[in-house]
Amino acid sequence: MKVSVILPAAGLGTRMNPGGASRKQFMELDGEPVVLHTIRKFAACAEVGEVVLAVRAEDRERVEELLAGRTFDKPVRLVEGGETRQNSVENALASLAPDVELVAVHDAVRPFIRAETIRQAIEAARESGAAIVGIVPVDTVKQVHLHKVRGTLNRDRLVLAQTPQVFQADLLREAFAKAREDEFTGTDESSLVERLERVEVTVISGSDRNIKITRPSDIDLAHLFLKEEKEREAGNLPAED
Image (cartoon, rainbow, N blue to C red; front, side, top):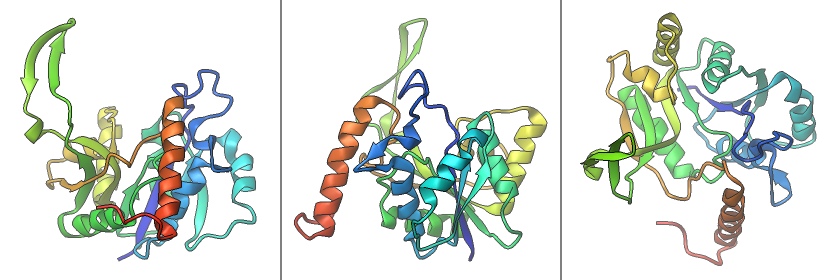
């Protein structure tokens, strides 16, 4: 079953750098932009056929230079992103070959996704049509209105959505078409698919290490995680549970 991975990387990253001069996907981690670390995780996955990176038009030359001279286990190609994440993913989705059966969408700035989690999400989507990665919140979650608590939500019925989110290609195309028709903007791809009410979205357990690098403090944590990752690869640390 052919699987394509879409990495939306057209964001301005104003939370990381209000001036946007060095956006989060281009922040360096161990001497390389974060996005390259993320690409490698998916390119190394046997189930993945290609990686499609959606970038802003003004960044295309820069990204082409980043990719030049680097080799990956799978093809990596660029498409032009849009003004929003939803636009970027839809542009990438439109560029996929007709024989692509599953599409995985992953934040370009989540470089610590585990290979096993990728495989589990793909397998779950192959069976059910849709799967996302998520973690149960450890903090108590309050429902509020006008700065006043209106209730306490049951954490056992909540997950914090991460990526990858994997879907049958035709299902995802239908979800985007419906969202465009209704002028609906979702916060993730799953929210678009959920609106169709055609399949139940399976949740695969994620990890608190699968961080999304959005703030300057996240880079410090990312350096620590990368150091530990390399130590595990070298056999100096036990594998993650």
